[in-house]
Image (tube, rainbow over all chains, first blue to last red; front, side, top):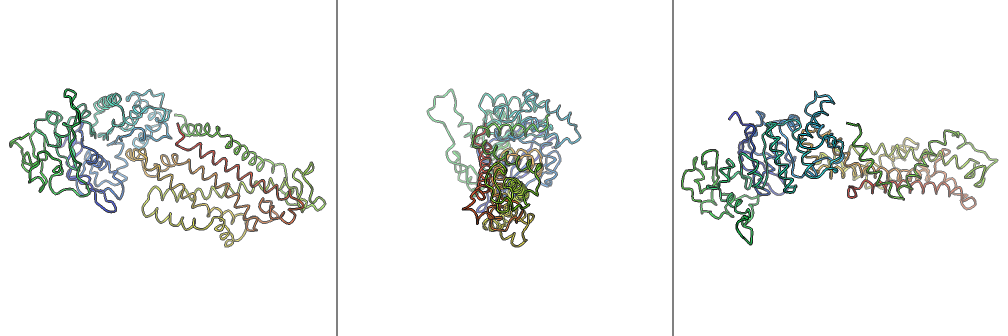
Length: 334
Length: 287
């Protein structure tokens, strides 16, 4: 597995509050190859952002705790890195884009200086002129005329701000870009432009990407592989085609696809998955999806299923497909 | 990239909003005149004129020879007012600067790092806050002894908690902003985040508090001098001038009206500037 840029093994993260432990991420395995885009899909509270913050080592101090697991990024063991080492890694080897471009830029600093700041932090040898040239280059790359670099964030529109955020994130040409719902706060037309630009830049700079989203349309448009998270676990993972062709799916994944309104069918109501995600402070003993699952069996509530591999990297964590079998070519009952 | 571009932008925006308030402009003009008088006039007039007694010209009324008349020792009140203004403004600003620096350090550390450090620092500040400002200053002066330096120390210590609280509060709101998290995600160090990303965004309330504290300090200096604990005679000081004039206030009301009005006008003008700044810097009115 030498070509993996990022390897996460058995990652568990808890949030410790005054009266409870919140089990936010529970035994997640994940890997990203060089140049690959991984989509991390799941509803709010599934642990997507927590997993991302663990990679950045930016979990809230004293509250977010990595309980177990190993994160290796480009050969560096993140879980053991000191804060000082992380400062050199963040923004340089791995960058993160946050959800809301309206608030991720400092309102008192011009956008040009904000792009320059990352370069100053990580490319210390560069002269003033070189940095200034790199800033112009990055702004052109994201499609904003460089003469606007002396303007403040409030002088830009939402889509343009997100372009600047992307320019900052990519300024040091990181190996991995984590985009946490980068287009959720934008309207659909701008969303499309921004995604296309991110895809294009990713190709050009050879960056790998983890795209966190709950929009399956976005996944189809940009990702190579998809991992679906539910209650802190990855319940299904595979190539985009395998997930989208939909022959064999985790019941939750089926529910996700089922809840997308279909323009060809006249329906008066949406078709949501009934119920709520289990309380992460007290997770059930068996499968996390047990309560809501339309295909549940009595045994599902007793023991959590393991991954069943369907070959080609497509794995499903469900008793329907054996659940504890290493290969899942049993009867696919979907 | 032009240097200070970010500063210019913010200052310009604030100024254009500040200018819209007539009261704030009135305050600013008054404060400027006071500063000009306090700094420029002593260049032409000797300090001796403010303290030398001349019994041949006692209790001169307001008029051509002496603009504000003379006091019971024959000293020109206008000259004394000017030198008094110098003391009030300079001691006021020196005190507030000292306590601002100390308070900013305490507040920034408490607000940014939080946890136990925050608890310890802020509980100590609470102890100081529980004692009325003037009373605290009086006890410190009583303990250290009289004199301008001790007065400065006493007033500075009594102001530190108010700054620590304001700085901490503004840092708490700013540090939760996404752009702080974003800066951390880019590998920015804690010190740089505080200096470059948090303080410039938290500066509004701090500036306002500073202005209001200057006014309060000027009032405090006068109060302490009035009760005989501040600046002692013959040094011209508005509060001690008031105290000196007390016995003759019915016969010669100008002796008490002039320093009294000066204190009131100065404090009000600085407060108007502070209010104007508060409105101009209020983020809700931005854009």
